[in-house]
Amino acid sequence: MNQGFDYDLVIIGAGVGGHGAALHAVSCGLKTAIIEAYDMGGTCVNRGCIPSKALLAASGRVRELRDAHHLKSLGIQVGNVEFDRQAIANHADNLVSKIQGDLTNSLQRLKVDIIRGWGKLAGTQKVTVTTDSGDKTITAKDIILSPGSIPFVPPGIEVDGKTVFTSDQGVKLESLPDWIAIIGSGYIGLEFSDIYSALGSEITMIEALNQLMPGFDRDIAKLAERVLITSRDIETKVGIYAKKIIPGSPVVIELADFKTKEDVDVIEVDACLVATGRIPATQNLGLESVGVELDRRNFIPVNDSMAVLSAGEIVPHLWAIGDANGKMMLAHAASAQGIVAVDNICGKHREIDYRSIPAAAFTHPEISYVGMTETAAQDLGKESGFEVGTARTYFKGNSKALAEGEADGIAKVVYRQDTGEVLGVHIFGMHASDLIHEASAAIANRQSVQTLAHLVHAHPTLSEVLDEAYKRAVS
Image (cartoon, rainbow, N blue to C red; front, side):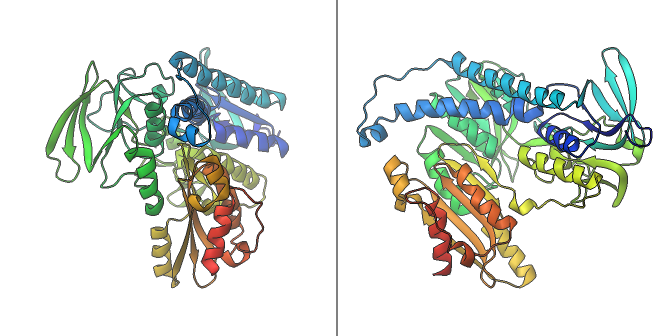
């Protein structure tokens, strides 16, 4: 223990970020406690990454086995394919239980104290925990805030958890509606549209902005839209927002033009998934006790060392990681931030490199990217005085993709024309979430397309789509 504190480090929130920070803290010799009011593992383990990937795995198998044309091209014939919705839901629940148990056991094995209750700051280096048996106060030399996020439900939308629900309830797969509306075409909306369409639901996807998949590179989004949306039983409404949603049987959705706010239609569906993003769970954390104000979007302000800021100045011994700081709302980013925070607590100055952190949507096929889109790179180029180059290759020219009969896909490399430095890589296609890490390492090391073009990739592998893209960039 340090200077009479109860702990060297107290972490509020036992999600992926808090868990990663705790493990690293123990390896650095810090006496550590972690506080969790709800489910160990947070959103990722209980309501996000883990159960959704279980549902995607099962529904993806159904899609593959029902694609008679694809199987016939491989010389395979399969009879009637059936599935059990409850068994698929149980698969997700069982995986959640296993991962949650593994996470808890790993903390206990390393002698991290797990404190169940609501933790909030009670002043400098002090935390109050509200438990079933009352409040108690503990002290720590350093405190990491890792409270995570919750689904964002826009005004006018009423959620009942059954007919109108967010991803939190959606991962339970309690029903398979004949017709479901999905509000939003980002990661969450895309993944659930993949699940529901594979299992037989008709879908209406409603996107308020003027194009589907607004957060993705446009070349990737165009092909992904054709494969993941247009070719499936998915109707789309773009530039339209859900002005009002009333739960029930049926669910009534009042639609309006996003720009003019004029009413355009009313539709009735069997269910509605609200996939409009997430907001930080930063209320009731006691930040006022240390003079910290949330920013205008309710995120905790931090610097790249994960230190909490108040009016631009560092608040001593206080750190914030994960969705709550809004820098990059991804589970693995939270874990990386936790490690960076602990290193800085231990006097090893480190900052996080967001450009090299990859992201993925686990659709069939998958989408992944790391670094900047072409548009963002061009904006940087205008500011910094360099031209941007791009190189594209397609899975239809890749031997492994052709052998699998999975030739829909594209890889795109964005780079500086003067130095060749890779600024971004975007992939849509089979196993894109695995392929992206070569590019992530390249960006982390600020490598050039000239260097990467001389790497040797095994043949025949999907990784050759990147090999070819690097070579095209320098040809």
